[in-house]
Length: 152
Ligand code: FES
Image 1: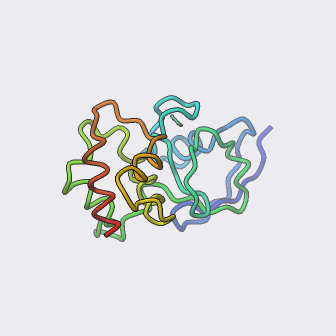
Image 2: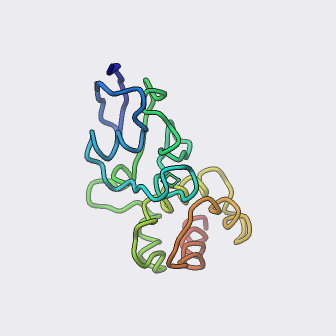
Image 3: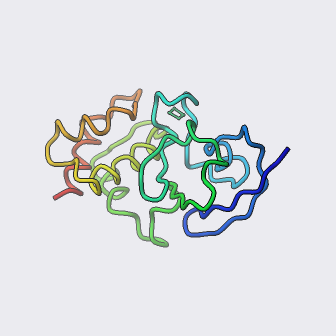
């Protein structure tokens, strides 16, 4: 049986009906068509599904959608300001912080949280904070460079 859910996503309020078993990740991708948030592993191991819930980064595959009544979700689609990229998005482009791009939305959502929460003081600190975001292409050094630049 579906239950009602009111959430805000990227500043827009939604009143939805969802099955209790649906993850936040599937809600975003399938019900709201926000496919920027990626599904890599679907069990908390890769970070491709990272979003912010009330400003805190979370693996959206590990959240049931219905746990988020009244919460405010930000996805990769909500970072840019109209046509102006978020500074972290611009830094990833400048530093080639991706190859295939599949992990990039999750990397960027974690990277924004990394700087905002004050964990970008050194390369080691950044690597530690970003360790839950896996990149099969091995773009890690460039990702760290991008985060360092935004932190400065
Ligand atoms: Fe959520 Fe991999 S899809 S951590």
